[in-house]
Length: 197
Image 1 (cartoon, rainbow, N blue to C red):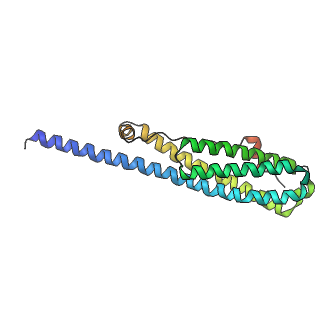
Image 2 (image 1 turned 60 degrees about the vertical axis):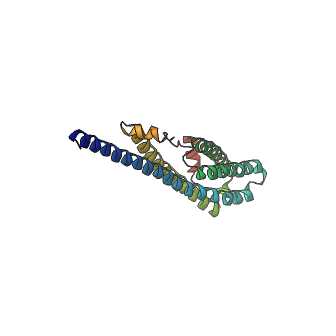
């Protein structure tokens, strides 16, 4: 064998091993995104489990506000359905978008519930309501931290998939950029959710 053949073989092997390494890194980063979504999923389920208890406590005091309570439960059910869909495919931008929309509706419904609760001193004084509100606020904070971790993983993946020469492997194996999760609550809704009771 000639020297040029050995050089070509060496270069070919180097390119092959680099491509395998780039592919494996992209797979690892994609799996990290799915894992980060799993952490969000855990906190969302916790929130969904708290909401019916919160509504039950509020129902005792807000009997004539049934429309508000029903809106919270309907929004919770819609968000839970969207979460279950997104959990089966955490890298699907459409499923994540639907989840973000459902979460925004839920945040708005909860904000209205807490705004109505402000007008009822007995409800504000109820120990169960205070504890549930505190748990919900704590869960909202955990969701925010988990969302940040998710977005950090998405950023790392998107950066890796867009940088040359790794983008060649990304395009060959259809590693598409992933969408960041935006906050689903406005500043006003966050203030309402952190209400002091």
